[in-house]
Image 1 (cartoon, rainbow, N blue to C red):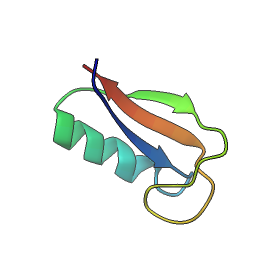
Image 2 (cartoon, rainbow, N blue to C red):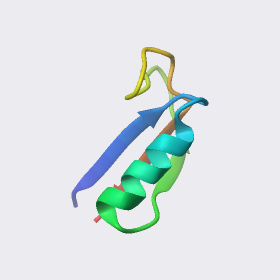
Image 3 (cartoon, helix red, strand yellow):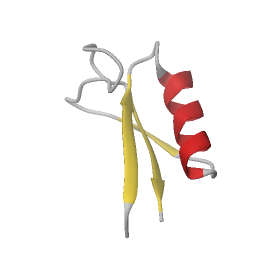
Length: 53
């Protein structure tokens, strides 16, 4: 099983959702993140946005 994950802070959650939907052409799964940094900035990530294949 392959998965694509994007870590997102509260500011970048919409960007992460849009990017994953556009890239994977399916709806992502959103989970709470712990001890990770946002993929778009250096803030703490609040969520993991991912797609499982």
